Every structure is written in structure tokens, then in C-alpha cells.
Length: 141
Image 1: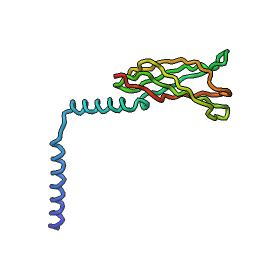
Image 2: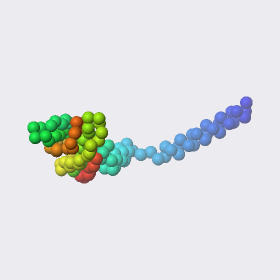
Image 3: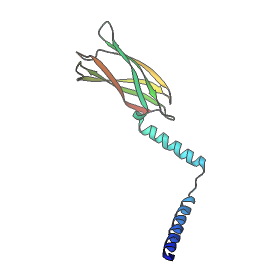
């Protein structure tokens, strides 16, 4: 019984020493907030595609051009992006990829805001559907 109590006392002492060593590295909430904010800005700066999304519609006009209209939304909280490039994919009736085209929107995309776009393109012969996604962007600040 004494051996069990001795082992428990040693373990308790060991855990209390470990936790007191960690408490010596206390940081004020303001420092932690600043570090977190910088970390978030770094993440947003390094991975713009994670924070830029695009949606919209398309139609074929009277002269056979496809008209794409939509928005690019920046969900980042700190970084403004610019010069967003969309990759437009053209598909057949069997969903076979016929080809792609890139279009760049030379605008600023502030945090938490959407920017609208409108493109006209001939696409590819036998195109039945179109999709697009953001493939490139540059941090502006």
C-alpha cells in the first residue's frame, strides 16, 4: 500500500512540474491575437484559391457566342486579391472535355466582397455545357 501511495505521489509531482513549466510561457491575449492574425494573413496570401470562389450562368446568343456572367467572391478576411484568372471548360453532350480557355479579370477583389464579370466566347464545336473555376490570383497587398 505504501508503494502505491509513493508511486502516486511521484506521478502527481511529475505532472505538476510539467504543467508549471508550461505556465511560464504565458502570453497576453493581445499577443496571441496578433500572432493569429498574422498567421491567417500568411495563409490567405499563400493560398488564394482557397478563398476565391466563382459562380454564375451562361447562355448562347444569336451569333453563336457563349455569354458567361457571374461573380467571383473573396472569402478572405484580410487580403485583397487582383488579376483573377478563370479557366473555362467546354463539354460535349456526353460530358467529354472538348477544350479549355483562360480569361483574366483585371480588378481588385477586396476581402468579403464579390466582383461581377461578363465574357463572350465562341467556345468549341459541339459544346453543350460549360464550367469554370478560379485557377490563379495575385495578392494585392
